[in-house]
Amino acid sequence: MPRFEPHPHRRPALIAGASSGIGAATAALLAAAGHPVALGARRTDRCEELAETIRKDGGEAFAHPLDVADSGSVARFVSAAAAALGDPEIVVSGAGDLGAERVHELDSEDFAAQVQVHLVGAHRLVSHVVPGMVARGRGDVVLVSSDVVRAPRTRMGAYVAAKNGVEGMARALQMELEGTGVRASVVRPGPTMTGMGMGWDAETTGEVLDEWVRWGLARHPYFLRAEDVAAVIAAVVATPRGTHLTLVEVQPEAAVTKPATAAESTAVSGGEEGR
Image (cartoon, rainbow, N blue to C red):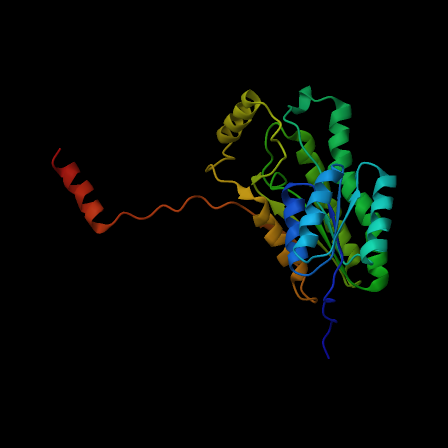
């Protein structure tokens, strides 16, 4: 007799921040795996476009407005998604954006707004979805964090604070959910090519990258793709019951450099000796 019943074949998933980037890529991947997906974001038109694409490919998708900074919006999204697709088995919290201001130059209201979206917004989803999961004795909550928790970056003070809060909340949640059958996991991406930060002007982007290099935070120019992170999220929720991936950090690989051949080494050596 197994310790845990296997995952249901059909697992409705709620994706916050599904209009682009990691959220959109995760929705597409989970739908391709046969799971119905509820796409939530403020840019509902983009969610509708993605939902239509998923349906054309034979998947199940539902789009609905979602602003994680608004408790009422979260409640309406969760309720509408459950009515359309069934009780959620998976929730992925990844909504948000970021600015490029220094902490001491950032208006406190703007600081609070980023914390509201990244941290309090994640809690709103948890508070609306997890009690039902606990009652059913199973479910997966994936909180998308950032490697800024381990290695803070300049010009991202509010984001750094919020993501540290997300991981602290996740750790407490994991302890509180132990023995309920519900898993809370953190996926911590490194630099990822998404829409976040793409609104910065060229001068600001250059300044930010120079600061990151100075602090040793940009070892190479490669970024993760949104679908790379989505693949990790899909793997986390697909892990068999009885196994809990509590924290997974994802980093981009640098370009592969081929070792010099024997002939090239000899040529270099010979050139040095002839000097």
